Length: 114
Length: 160
Length: 122
Image 1 (cartoon, helix red, strand yellow):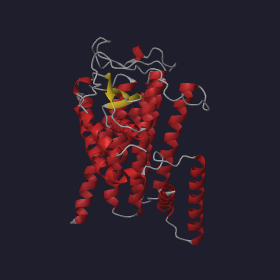
Image 2 (cartoon, rainbow over the protein chains, first blue to last red):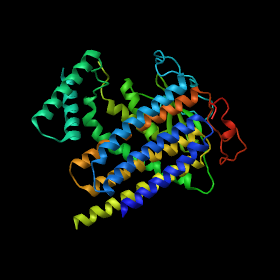
Image 3 (cartoon, rainbow over the protein chains, first blue to last red):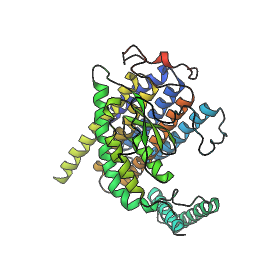
Image 4 (tube, rainbow over the protein chains, first blue to last red):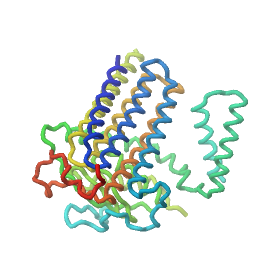
């Protein structure tokens, strides 16, 4: 019984996140939503294994977790560089979008208190 | 050398957990596979304090339960935020200072920040952490200072 | 007696996990932009998956299956912050700027579509 309830919650959650994957205004929303659906799938496979009394499903869940992570990273790398073989930035380079130093408002970069 | 033995032990334990067949043939395959994997790691020169951080194991037993408790607290906080009838998000980018001396320590600190919902590390340059916080006013720096202190303790002595 | 306690504990953990999971999914729909949604995604990855897997482990008792469950959990907790950080970094370098209260009309419940400028075509 409790596995049925958990599976139902997982499926409802996947449906909600699928809405975000379909709506999401940017590609990053979609990647985030797909990664989240993948995590839920891992848990769902584990719960279904217990529901059917076949704990061997856990091996599938582990493999799916690996594929989900690698897939997310690959898609993001492709979006960012347009090329899966692109090298990484040189050491010490400031990534794009990073604004070094403290902002004047809301900054918590306090060296003294640690 | 010591690290190679550690890595082999960890890999073989993983093999045993995933296989759990104790026939001579499969055990031989397991031993051989782990030896080849360790040999490749040694040849690649990736066997160091970062890739096999066994020196952290003892202190991790103290750090991980604290981290789980912290994750639970911030989960409850974000859940209340999401379930409120009117969203009160006030997101902002804030900067933290990291006092860790090694890249491994910074990695652990950044991942700990990201694991606690409500704060996500978006960029690191040196000891300057750029963090996206979902409610700016709830971040007063004290919790992050606490976490920073604990990760620095977990990291232990600086790498030689 | 021990068995009943274990069953009750696993019920509580599974229901708690389902609660956090549904809340996180709701947050994915409700929150205004991709940076705030990452916090909701982090909720499902940490407490949602964590409590459900630990609940299954408590139900199962101490044997090999429990070890594998905890292995999956450890793997999820190692990879989820890296994936989240990768999304954030890619979104920042793709030109997205985080949603802030001051910049908009003060209504945090907007869908954020209007600030997706500079992002990839959706």
